[in-house]
Image (cartoon, one colour):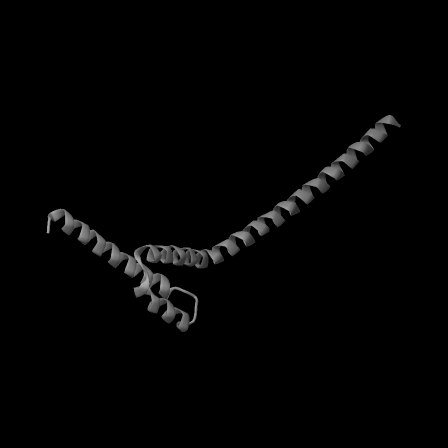
Length: 113
C-alpha cells in the first residue's frame, strides 16, 4: 500500500473511533427506556456512513435540547421577574408623576385665584 492510502485508512479509522465514542455517549445520555436504547444499538451495524452521520446529528440535537431545556426555563423565569420589577417601578414612577402634576395643578389654581 502506498503511504497516501495508509494515511486515508488511518484517518477513516480515527473518525470511526471518534464517531463510535460520540454515539456511545449520546445513546447513554438518552432519556428513554432500556428497550429503546437496546433497539437503537442493535440497528447500528446495519447503518451506512451517511445514516450514521444523520443519526449522530439527530442525537446531538436531542442532547442539546435536553441540556438547555432547564437553562431556557431559568432564562424565561429571570426575564419574567425582571419585567415584573420594571413594571412595578414604572407604575410607581407614573404614580409619582401623577402626584407631581396634581401638585402643579393646585399651585396653578392658587396663582390664578
